[in-house]
Image (tube, rainbow, N blue to C red; front, side, top):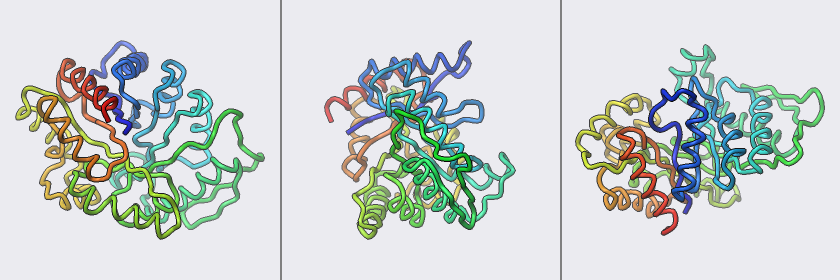
Length: 311
């Protein structure tokens, strides 16, 4: 099982944040962590960081967790992905998501119009572009045509595409049109009772192999779990009221998103991460490792490297 982390994690006030993040990728690789996934930020571009990290740190898997499909056109995103694939020697794992209606409409000024229809059309168009290099597609929410001929970058293979899907319809679209899902805040009960069976059944109905289930789990090794629990509840409170996250939290009987975070000593955190594997996760990404001190982050990364080797 591959165990990865998300970046940024920790101090974002370094003199040069990009070089600091590349240094952290090296530290993660040296700790034995198998993958680094960059989150798309308002001030940082995930795929640019993936391309840079691929040049700086050989071997480690690199991904985005996640790039919102609004307002990026699939032709533009496909060009970014091909560039990153060539730069990394084909180590990119592309994580996508719809994001939240409030963020899309208030932040980008883009209508959050028929999101599930848009997700299906976006995955269809992007898959065609990545595999064929050209497209002439007219959907209900999306138009895409490569007017200058095939778009191909020598050395860049089509990457795996994963979707941050939680609802039944999004999971079905993911099973039919992508390679796997990146569920966040789906506790083991929600994962094992609902998410994994739902996406596997949809893939089987579509005649496709069982998708990857790359569970994103907030976790931190700490000697003060009570204080960090309150901090996690405050940091993750944004997700408490988003319908898709609220539904998956309710499926696990979890009141607040911060309560999903695994906190405690190495043995406690390792046992909690093992529950996700037992619930059907094929891979893990550990997030929020920068919520505490630098010592706690490094202890967590050391544990993850050990679990990667053991598992």
